[in-house]
Length: 175
Image (tube, rainbow, N blue to C red):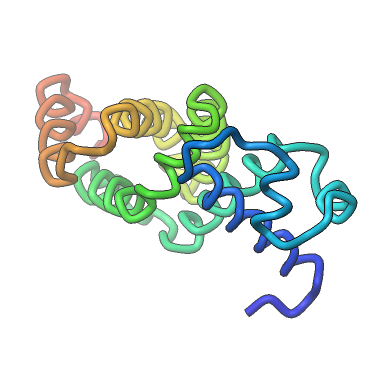
């Protein structure tokens, strides 16, 4: 899985970051290093501080999302929403732990990173509308995380599609 030592160390530090966030004690670099089984000097060879580990964890989630979805051929709001929220539902544990670290950084990181991924995924025909939609999807994702992701995916998608139809977004998207 992880052949080079640098990738292995970063993997162990990310894993320990999540493990430390799952506990109620304050998160410190010393505690993280103890949990990961690495020294502080090793930690600082990879990251400037805890925010760097957080950013790396978030980037890993965004990369997983990018790897899990295929390029858009058509803009089908229901399909895209179902795929989007179903993926993130599978990442619930990690998202809720990252929220514990810093909800504001999580929201910003998802928004900026998510829009970048959507732009890369969109074909030219839907690029502008996809970028516009991504902001809405990611804002909904952030609200969903704030409510501990309790609303089932199908209800969330149904509500989104219903409201979009009433606002005539589907007519715009299919033209």
